[in-house]
Image (tube, rainbow, N blue to C red; front, side, top):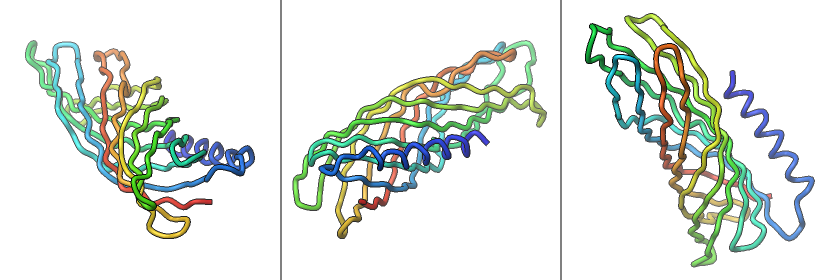
Length: 206
């Protein structure tokens, strides 16, 4: 449900950009699919910390304003993936606990670009994010606790845009999302995580 709410807010915000856009820039929007990789530390009462890297499908929606050939601003919604892992007990006979984590983010970033050719422009990006993470802790197939975390973090990354035809370009980019999740529960504390994302996207210019 929260994913759909974030998506609605994202689309509404994106729509409003066109009404305040200056004629000198280029508006664009696109969708991307790829893979996310997360470091998932989870510390519980009577359980050791695990630090597994887990992969998941990544989906992103982006709208941007390229104000000149060297600078652009982007609003992005990312489904950072669904992850599951196990926190193994080490004392007092505590049953193995399975953890499910589901994270999304909305971010605003600045892109610094350089057009090395007429149709190719590598870039770097840096921005801030607002992330939402839902957790479920299961013991013996029974959900023991559910928790949600909303917090601010930041992103950075790099990539390249390749113009394929008039008003259309493709992008491949890698993004690192820092400080995702983290919340205290009656069963222990879920630590903040870092998620990296490699995405291939298609864009249309307005």
